[in-house]
Image (tube, rainbow, N blue to C red; front, top):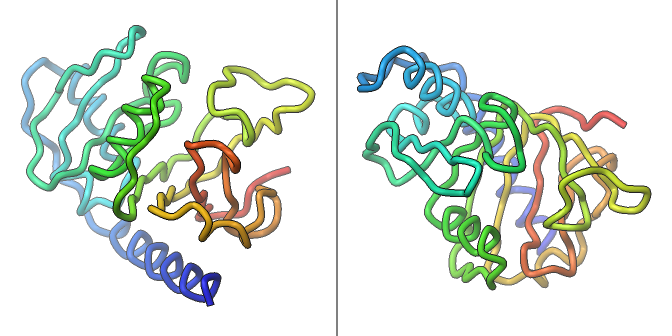
Length: 196
């Protein structure tokens, strides 16, 4: 039953994402010149157009400090890169809802995330790689299952035991659980198949 509910939820999310991606995105009005405008466009590209156009846009520096590039109106936060360890702007832009932003803050601080509601995050341009087993790995090793994810949606659930029946293999042909057995566990839902 849990898997059926999860599959239906993911199917709806993927459908909404694909429909929203077909919408046009307007150019944002921003201060700071062409450099900031390019970063804002990159950040917005991580999510469906309807989410990106109303999102707050932030940029993270090497120390993990956030700088706002544009105020938003819809409760979403997008960034042109995961920042710091993750690398250059455009490598892995993401858009996160409020639950995911709280999770990200806990992860960066190595604290326990407080996931009380379902959370959705978008990385519709994929990412440049992360360990599938170690939340704090910064490079591939022989045993940390490094994976470069294709465009995907990330899902948080308040009760991690709901994920027990889902696979952890990113090459299983669908969703998988990342960082299982840690307090940062979440579901990865690829939009296209994950390359081996």
